[in-house]
Image (cartoon, rainbow, N blue to C red):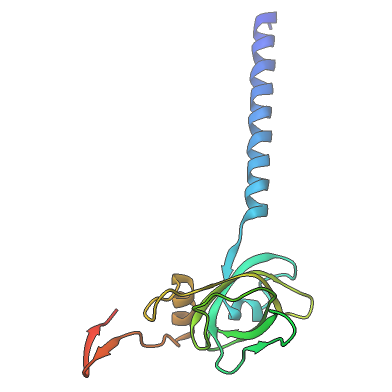
Length: 158
């Protein structure tokens, strides 16, 4: 092998090694910032480990909201009509948050199986449901009717 070929081979090897290291670093950074969506059924099935950040979506259970008298802490249950997960949130809830509506919360599970939310997102009108929640409710066979009626005529039928 000539010295010129040897230099080219070393250069190509270093280039491939550098590109591989760059791709590995990008994939590692992407994986650590990824927040997947899970339903309460996924959490109950144990597919999410405590401490792993993810988004949890479902319907707020009627009568489950408990607000602290001393602080802004709130606790409520989230369901996909099959399984229920308790959510704790230590900040101000969105104005549109209410019982019986769909929400998406970002956070992680603690060791007791409670979801500790860092952010809660509420729907923006009475007919909107986040796609992830709608899909989870359809899988569970519990999709609520969202048809709007006016004088006994259906005006919106999604």
